[in-house]
Image 1 (tube, rainbow, N blue to C red):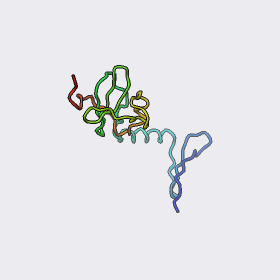
Image 2: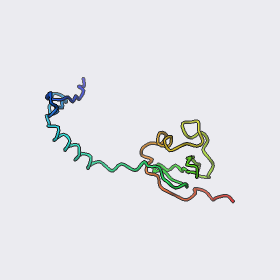
Image 3: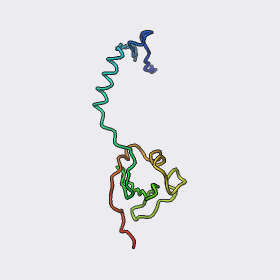
Length: 123
C-alpha cells in the first residue's frame, strides 16, 4: 500500500514546514524551503515563450504543424499544401484567437518559429 506524501506546517507561526514521505521526515524553515525551490528552478529548462507573435504570417510549431496568423489576428492551421484544416480549433472552428491556440496546442509545440509559406503562393 502506498502512502501519500503530505506537507504541513510544522509550527503555528508558519516558520517551518515538515514534509513526510514513507515515514521519513524533512523539516525545513520557510526560508530554506524557498531557497531550495529557487535552486531547483534554475536546474529546470527555461520555459519556452507562449507569447503571441505580433506579425501576421506563417509559423511552425516545434511539433511540426503549420499555422498562419492573418492581418486581423485570427489563427488558422494549414495542411502542407496550404489548404485550411477545417474545424481544427476545438473541433469546430476554422479560425481562432490566441487564447484558443494556447488551449488547443500542447505546451511542447511552443515556441512558434516564423517560417515561409509551406506551399507555393498562388497568384
